[in-house]
Length: 367
Ligand code: FES
Ligand SMILES: [Fe+2]
Image 1 (spheres, protein in one colour):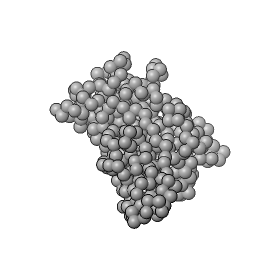
Image 2 (cartoon, rainbow, N blue to C red):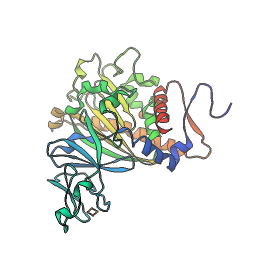
Image 3 (cartoon, helix red, strand yellow):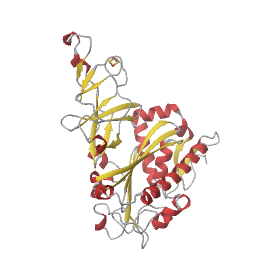
């Protein structure tokens, strides 16, 4: 029997798939270049003229709120000589986006409206509008697709085995981001995605978490006796927090459940949603290279909680951050291992069944 076929195991990614720059470039084109990618929260663009600069695949994308208060997205590239237009997110474009090189200006609709030192009619400005990119939002989350023929966002969300739209009852659009953390992780994005897709490691890596969510000790993330894909907290536990006596308001719909519960969904390829009684944690992967991924994590609470300055969010945020840090440590350890020339490929057991789904979708898109 070859190393590729081992009884009781199914094949995961190969050493090349975790390390090769050529395969990484293909992934940016065929996976990040075609799927909808989670790009940020719409409340980051609260005012007309606010902008968000994000990396999607190999591209820098400029997202802004236009004068009708709608979102627009463009390649962050000037049509004159190709300078990047904006370096960073911010506010206050006013009426125009002005290139820092020769000061050509574009309206918030992407139309070229000024070309200093040139007569208005000497250049066919209409041929030089910014190149637009598809943008849409769901539950207060902005998604961008570089594919002009991308299917509608809701239809695309429905194509996920993890059923993210079941989480709409928690009304994430109504929640407010209290903090964003940024981690530079020395691991391939698929190492992170596989790690999120299984809980075989939970009892080993997350002792504090499995004390609060007992089903995680079994390597499973959902309970066989629940149809809603939730997992109940241990008796007497009320939140994912270091402080079980805290009194933060519950998320919408949480009080309708029989038990204090947690829910999760991986929105392929770059978003994690983790719902617990008092906080929704949104995670965004931005792959930088085969062995480097930036992770952005947002901690969302009901507005009443964020507005009440007497409340201490630290025990809740630091609990999730601790779990995040435990995951980052094992993923970086995996990346070091899968870089060894002795390593051929990884495997999944039957319990790691959501990893199988991940691989299936990846293979369908990359081939
Ligand atoms: S490159 Fe933008 S104005 Fe010249
Ligand atoms: Fe984990």
